[in-house]
Image (cartoon, rainbow, N blue to C red; front, side, top):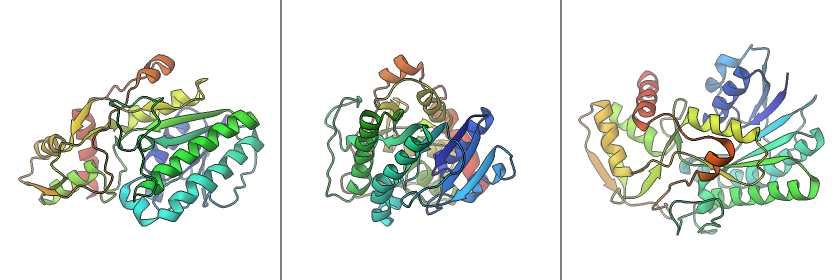
Length: 310
């Protein structure tokens, strides 16, 4: 049975990856310090002989007994609310944490996959964003703690691949949504849905014309799995290129939920990207992957989850 370590495995994406690998017949070691992860996300896996949980901060020295075939590094605050609350921890997990996990991968001769992000493109000057675009990031802005941590993580990953011969993969994750997102994590879909369910106005920042391209979590996990098992060592965008404005997204959620909530406009946060859309040509060509679940269906599933948990 192949063995995989998933750091940040109790988080939104990490927990779905734990499910994926258990279902595919892997032994899964989930590691998380729980500052943004939640044991409820993996409670259904506790007691499964294929699954174990380690409470640990990967920015400190990591020890895992036994062999490892794969390591997926997903440990990091990922929403604006989280990385603004934990700026130093975010920088540490992107630098010290990535270094520690890469060192473990080298020692175990394991294949390593880094969870990077579309935020490495910053507020992009090209649209859609391709992997060969170097980005437009403000390193001293409030979002720089996350953006630059991920850019450093990518550089460290490539250095370990080139200098130490570690097998590495880099996924650049675009906006993702689905079950197990936290209601108050600051991202648009959980914010809109929780406001709609409470009958509160939906908060749209700026004039709402800024765009995102949102991908349902199952599609994203399938793309990550295919990338891990591929031979591609350079970054690959995984996301849904179906672009939508934040105002239109709010209107879709109002219609979905049947709420009578209005829309309330607030000032746009500093360095908030005006556009975000992945070019997934490489994923289509190299991985034979593209999203399968339409936004209407993904939002419906996510809404059912929030309605049951609010």
